[in-house]
Length: 388
Image (cartoon, rainbow, N blue to C red):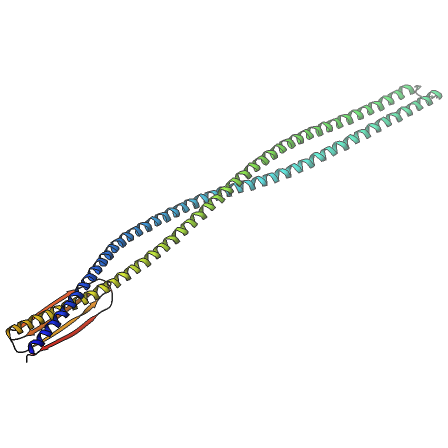
């Protein structure tokens, strides 16, 4: 009965060992798969490093483009200031020309008034000359009529005058002398009037010619000023067009820079989110790997324990020993992780006592640089066997 019991126990132990060996093979395959995943994650880490380098290069390129746009903006602003200065100069010149034109037009109006006044004076003087000429003709006619009447009276009258000095009065000579005096006075008056009016007329003609020359020169200056104003207006319009184009280019460059910065920020955000997700996936897979390592280590410990148990049982059965008590204490635990640093440790110990005596122990320790949780496991296995 005792032999049958030990045989049954042996077969049960062998079946249990076979089951655990099968589980160990499955866990080994899972462990290989996890190792493969870890290698893939390491390759992804390298790829992320390459992505970080590409990302930094892209950011540097965008910064260079932004600096170039800033320099171009400063250059365009300088050109815009120069153009604004030119526009201001042309505007001042245009205003000066407008003021000159106004002053010239005022002078033209004054000269025109003077010419009109001179022409009116000329007309009045001509009217006065005609009136004086008519008056002279009238006085001449009156004088001739009076002279004829006086001559007729003298012819019809015979006067005898006796004087003490015995002189005869010659009326014909007296009349002739008076007539000559009147004619001389009339001729002198007419000559003086004609010379005076002629002089005035020549002066008015000279003034009118001078005013006409001034008027022609003023008209020529006004025409030149109008042409200059038109040319300056065209230049001002061209400069305004250039200014509008420069302002449009500056606005377009600013818009392009803002869009590039926004695009870069969005890409940075996407890459940071992808990096964070990759880190989280890596941490999760590392935790799974550590858990699998814990399970594998526990299975290895249990398999070694049962192997030692079977070997001890076989040796006891072969030697016919009395009783054996096996105490197995298994401790697994100590998994902690963090992105800044981590550490883990495993350990187990086993003991076997029989008539011959046996003892064993092993330990395992490792570390990881990823964050996660902490796991600890402690199990105690006690197997007792007695011989009846």
